[in-house]
Length: 180
Image (cartoon, rainbow, N blue to C red; front, side, top):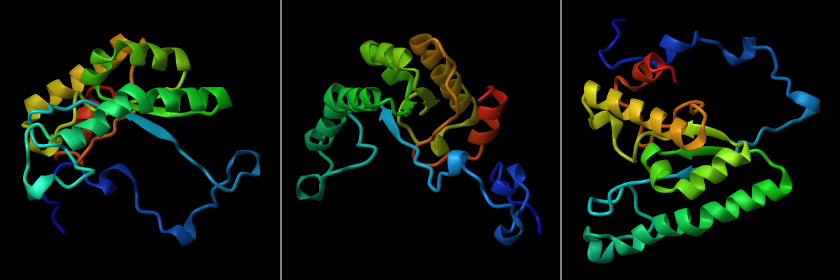
C-alpha cells in the first residue's frame, strides 16, 4: 500500500516483530519489572491558553491568566521539583529529567541541581508547544535551541527527546538530523 505523506511511521524505524516470535526479555539480576521514573521541568506562556488543565476553568471559560492551573505549574517548579530531587537522591534512586530548554535557562538553580545529581536529562523541547503546528524551519530551530540550552545549563547534551502533544510530521527526522 502507498505510504501516506505523514513523515516517519513506526515501521520506518523498526521492523515488524510478532511477540510470539521474540526472544523473552531478560532483565538484569532476575528482575521481573522495570520502572522508569521521570519528572518534568517545563515552561509555557501564562498569557496563552494553558497547554493542559488540571482544574476546569471557571464557568467553562478560558480566563487569562488561568490562575488555578498556572499555580500547579508554579508549585511544581518552586516546590515539587525540589522535593522529588531530595527524595530520589536520599534513596540513591535513578531518575530522568524531561527538561524544556527555556525552563532550564529560567531556573538556573534547578539546572545546577540536575547537573550535580547525575540524573539523565532528556529534552522536553524548547518550551511547551504543539510541534505539529510548526513549520519545518521553526521546529528545527526549537530543537536546536532546546539542545543548546540544556547543554549550557547542565554541561551535557540531552539524551533523547520527549515531545508533548505528539510530534509533528518532521519531528523524528529533525531530532535525528540534529543528533538527538
